[in-house]
Length: 188
Image (cartoon, rainbow, N blue to C red; front, side, top):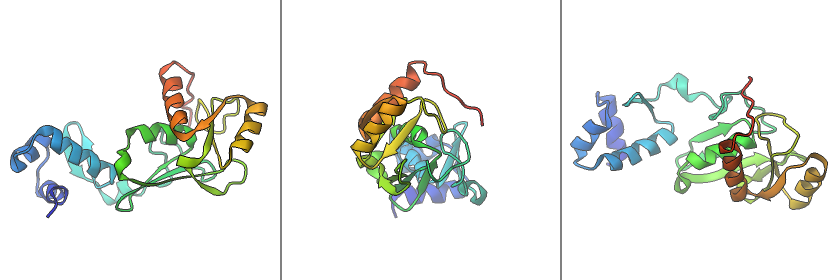
């Protein structure tokens, strides 16, 4: 049996802390924390105040709520992260999707999908062009939009400002804007 399956069994039987689990497996706390983070990303456990719990059924049904800001999800703007094992993580917009990407274990990602802002067709977010920091704000601030092609992104920048960039640079730019004191609207 894989250690993570055994961890789930132990939690179900009453284990509540990383220390208990580390002692049981005779491994470092860091090893257990890594396993717990993966189980949390898979949606199988919840970590609260130093304790771990199995995720209850009602907590799993949150595909209509953003995993970052808690807003209702508009599918025209949404990001969907599909992890190994089929777990899906939804965000309301590219802004939250770029932020959420930083906290995910990239080795666990199978697919990152969003929709082209103009055509509304599904696109692979990792190969899309993003416009970050434009004056158009349909959801969270600073804004971010995904485009299936670079030309459409360039036209959008001419009309609404911002910078056009690839996915990974967009992640870095969003992190920079959020850390740099950019006004962020959390009214929902």
